Length: 81
Image (tube, rainbow, N blue to C red):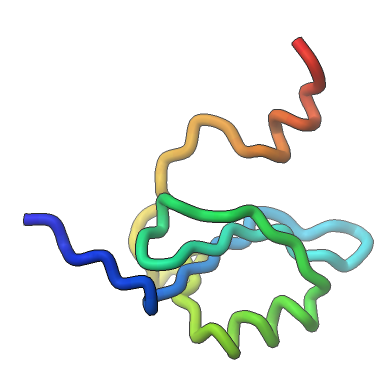
């Protein structure tokens, strides 16, 4: 039986840290596999996570990584076909 969708449960998965101080991450509401790719400065990211009371998926205390065939950043870096 599938668990109920809870939009008040929020998830974050860090996907990269840039040399200019920005943190790239996925933010999801209710379901970790449905996410938006976001980017904030380290300080803003920490504040965002605290304010949203997120579950960190990039740490050992979280459910498994959601499958994803391609990330938007990877597609953009590859350029046109």
